[in-house]
Image (cartoon, rainbow, N blue to C red; front, side, top):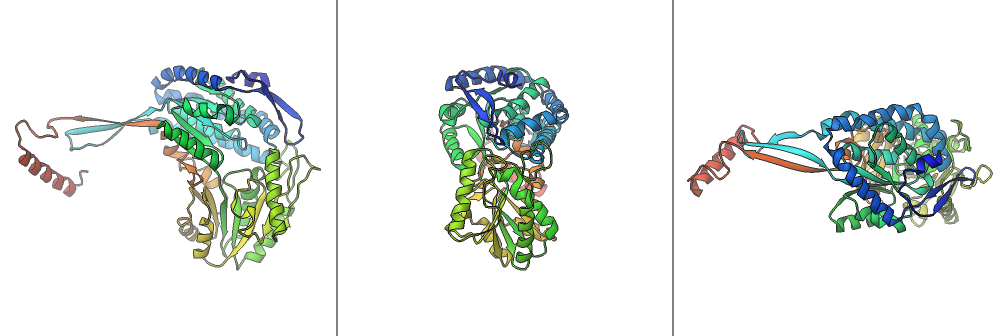
Length: 506
């Protein structure tokens, strides 16, 4: 299978061996691309894109509708690949499978209508007829990280293709097989040759080329890397979108259903071992329920099952990289040394696998501690006490990030009121991240240092297009009739403006 998947990679460099987080054993040798390989990929993709863009959207979406069924039918195959490459629990790998299928189907059904040309009111009623068209950008760079290697390339790359673009895709090498599997499946579903071309390599080697040859860049990753990409794209006057880091808050109100909240936050904090940009790292609990919630939440966390099984028995799997284990360990050790209390977890578990770390709950985390404000991106959550809504809204917003948040209350209207005060791109009520993420018609993205632009919804498709207005003039010119002097034209246009306001014609 490895040779079949890597055969499509535009690569001429030496191979890199990837290793399984569960065991440390080798998985595959993957060829690496050079800057010249990237340039060649863009040239091939640009040639293929011209014919693809000429097709009506209703024809372009057909392979994607087939992809939906194929990924569900062959889920066991991709679940195994995802687990081997990422080390995540199977239940969290299934989230990727479901999302890849459902998100693709959403656009396969709706993209033709979103891309259809629209009539809008013109400068003058009847006399001006104006239409808006959406043209593809050209060739899009889709750069994705290792933590969700199926869903992130699909979530950005597939809408770009349906909008009429070609794609050069750069997944992380560690988890490239999962991304290549999705590309291979889409080609099997009927996508024409060279419309999506994968490249592999380190950012230092091919990162600049991925921006310099692109007509648009879709990036998911760290805030620092996103800022560099945005600067380079801006220098070329091309657009980019970026979903970046988060230090996401959860607010537990005094009227929250504690059973529901504890169960929901186990997923919100520890899905994919916390290596999820929208996961919760800060829990703010109302003082009226603080003691009860903290006791029950810590007990539930201590009872979580960790294993390296290829079944659905694990509540949490492994970290993916040694550097993630190092960061998690450093954050917890720093907090412990400076006075934080560890209520659950707090140590690595090499007895299960080389990159396992226990799900960890801390209290007494202060601003002097690294875990307070820095994104941990691991199975670590800090719990804080609050007294009222004004205080907790300020606490939730006291970060450079603004990606996701969650609010837990029996009063949905109250939850929505608090949500409107939170500076985050998505806010979930009585759920951690899935409700907003899987509402595919709603835009998803970050505020502040958590990103630019949005995926999902109309915005998530039209970001990959250039919008064009085409207006035609009939019966009377905007400069008046032949021979009309300026004073008369001004009186006529003034009267027209008053009439349009009165009759709501604009």
